[in-house]
Amino acid sequence: MAAVLFTFFARLGVGYFKEATRPVVQDEPAEDVPTSISLTYVCDMCGLELAVVKVAKEKGPKHCGEEMRLVVERD
Image 1 (cartoon, rainbow, N blue to C red):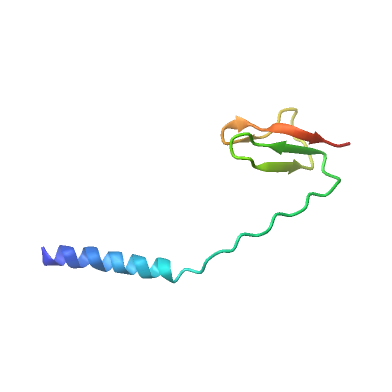
Image 2 (cartoon, helix red, strand yellow):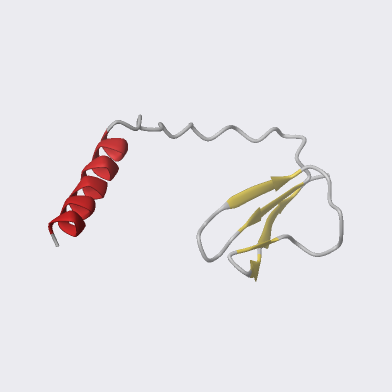
């Protein structure tokens, strides 16, 4: 029984110190979209905006399992 408890607490301690010593990743700022972008889509579920330079098909891309909505079309 003591060996099982020791193993449990040893794994817990090692996992804690691994997580505590991991560096924090900083979020990168959003980039400006060039004016040459032809299509911009937005996901109604999560709010993700996607700028498309080259369209592969007539339908919009999918995100969160739903088709994204076209918000800007430039020529």
